[in-house]
Length: 238
Length: 282
Image (cartoon, rainbow over the protein chains, first blue to last red):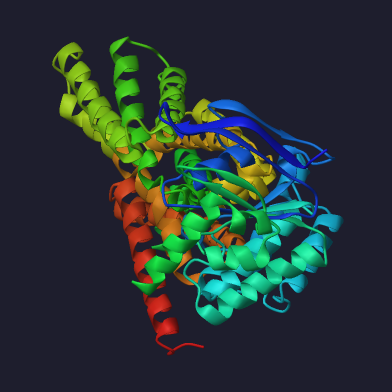
């Protein structure tokens, strides 16, 4: 049984379907990259997986001990308000909110979990710093620590490196690799950087005019993959 | 001057005004932090105009107590405003602007048509600017105000962490199982209650000031959600007390005096922030 199974999924908004007949599954331990042209429905797919939006057809089911609420999520950076007054500790702790239910305050375990994740992301000693005064890379690590408070199973990352410089980007990818390989956390990452997707991911989901889902090696050999890759390379040379 | 103050404090209506003023200032500043950060600064303004319209309807219907109907209509509008914000057929600020101007106009129209003769402009001025109504509170109104603000305060403390999560990142909160819609609704309800209460204090035009000024001032200087919330509450209470005392001693209009003090406090905080970032204070 897979963590996430999509069966004959149709996506769209305002009554218009932009994608139909999507089938794929995510197994524990996978590192899935979702690639595709702008406007192909990557973000809509992500919102549907998170349960923020109902599918227009077909189904998404979670299984193997994963519930809908155990999906940690790293939003695109622009979505979080940059002028918000909040300390690192406050933000990371808010990742535990889903498990609180109606309990009004955080308990000891949740505070300890937040402290562990702050340390894991290399932010120890900065707990009281203000989020908006951090660098882009640090901000992403705060949000990653928050996502880790919400789940130990599956992380959904939406363009986690957009707007970061090359050095910080590389660091971020290494951090995600570690979470996947060492901690066994399943990763679903939306990316438009196909080269990175090929280097890091175990599976590729390509959506757009033509759809591909499968292991990375098969993607490179597939018709969709070859076309997309040659276009990308052509684009880079031009 | 102190003698004069003590003399005035001997009157029960002055003490009532102080109690009600402090409570409303406290509640509105707490909610203000969330509202400002959620980009809902104007919901306070919109709802206060709705409350004005509702009050006009109630007085035209010759109701002895205008409060229940006003509260009901304002709450319904608060919920409606929030839902249009989510469905996005009519964008949030447009909806607020429409409702606010519409309610103001209808309210004035009704009062104009159905109030024969009398001191209409005086009535309208009182409702809009609150002139002296805080000094004519009855004991019953004071108790009602205490109970309602206690409820709002308790709800705020219990929901503090949830409001933070929903305000900071609504998508993340919903994705991890926090019912963002419910908490937004509760926030709207609390705002409606406070606005109807605050109409007695500063009148419907100046309520936004009570909601947004303390939060904005606190955000200039403090950097975490908790410190901003606490600072905004303390600041708002101090400004309200100061404004009330000044207006009692110098017999200036209560609402505008409080807002003027709030404005001065904002100026001071902005200056503090400038000096701090400029490196003059460490």
